[in-house]
Length: 128
Image (cartoon, rainbow, N blue to C red; front, side):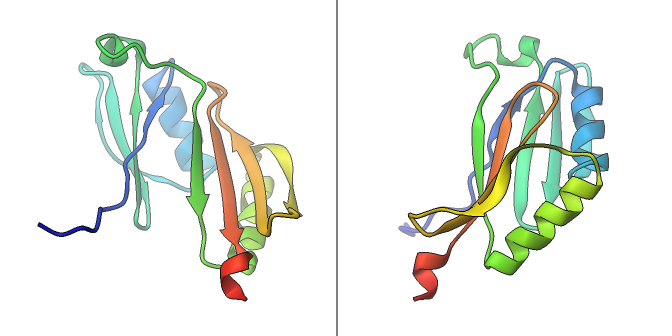
């Protein structure tokens, strides 16, 4: 058995699959890979990042609900800056500004219509 894990696939709790999928596609640039409306789940992706959008009926057995926080670790400060510019221009809801933190993360945060947060960062401590 390999000791390495694949990329995690977060489940994003949303009220309306169609509205959430539209926001993730139009504002954040994700691809809608598939939608199972009757089951209350959709798969979205951007590059190697995969996530599920799920409605209340789908989540009922687990009881998970919004808001949640997902960290997206990019490869450089430049990528963080470029994504911030792209998402800002697309009317994504930026809820914390682009900045370099004292703990050596370059980051910003956006929110989706359900209040879920995507915290985008690069750990430039690793560059030293």
